[in-house]
Length: 332
Ligand code: AHN
Ligand code: ZN
Image (cartoon, rainbow, N blue to C red; front, side, top):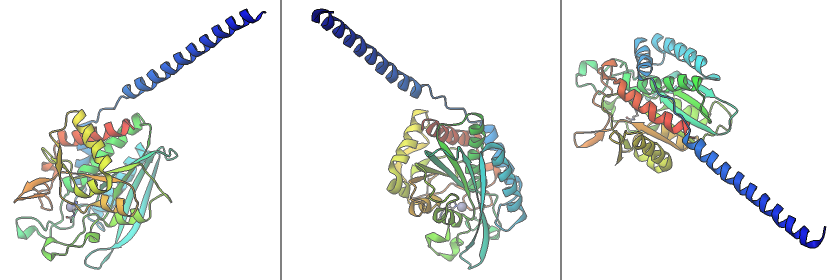
C-alpha cells in the first residue's frame, strides 16, 4: 500500500471512529436525560395513610410507660418488619423535666441498608401526657390522642414504607420514629429549655442506630395531618439546611401544592430536627403546619388540647405531604 492510499484509509478510519464515538456520547446523554424524565413516582394511597393514623390513635394516647404505648410500639415494629429490610428498636432512658427517668424506644426501619446514598425520614410516635394547652383547665392533666401531633407524620411514613416495599427508590432510606418528643414541661411552668423536648431524637442523634451513620439529608414530619395545612419555612431548617427546604418546597410547587408549602419565613421551632442537625450533623428540615394565631405564627388550632383527635385529620393533607416527600425521594 503506498502512502497515498494509507493516508486515505487512515482518514476514513479516523472519521468513522470519531463519528461512532460522537454517536455513542449523544446516545448516552439522551439515555441519562430520558432516565431522569422517566422516573415514575408511585402514588401515595391517602386512605392507607389515614388508616395508619386511625390505628395508632385506636391504642389510646401513646404515653411512654403505658400499655397503649407498648401495644402501639409492637404494632409499629410489625408493620415496619413487613415493609422494610431491617428494623432496629433503640431502647433508652431519659430524664424528663420533673426529674423522672423514663424508658423510651426509637424505632428505626432501613431500606437498602448497604446503599451508601441515604435519606432520613422522621416523625415522633409518642403522644403528649397532658393537654396543658386546652382552653378547659379541667383537661390540663389529660393525655392527648395526638392524632395530628405525632400520629399524622408516622401514618404518612408508614404509607411511604408500604410504597417502598412495592417499588424501591434508588437511594437507601431510613425511617426513624422518635420516642419521648412530647414530654416537655407544661406551659404553665414557663420553663423554656430546649433540651427538655425531643428526648428520643437527642439520644439517637448522639448515638445513631448504626455507628458513624450518615445521610444526605433528613426530613421531619410534624403535625402534617390537619385540614388545610400551611407549611412555612421554619427558622432552624433555613439555618441548617436551606437547600433541603428549597428542594422540598420546589417539588411541592412543581406538583401543584404551592398553596400549602408557602414561600414564607416561619418561626424557630425547637423540634426533633434541631438535634439531628446539631448532634448528628445531618442537614434536616421540619415540615410543620404553622398558622397565624393571636398576632403570632403558631401551631395548628388543637395543639396540645384534647381536641387533637382523629376528627382533626384530613386524608387530603396526608396524601399531599406523602406525595411531596415521595417525589423528592424517587427523584434522588
Ligand atoms: C415546643 O413547643 C417548645 N416545641 C414543640 C415541638 C413539638 C411539640 N412538636 C410537637 N409537639
Ligand atoms: Zn406536641
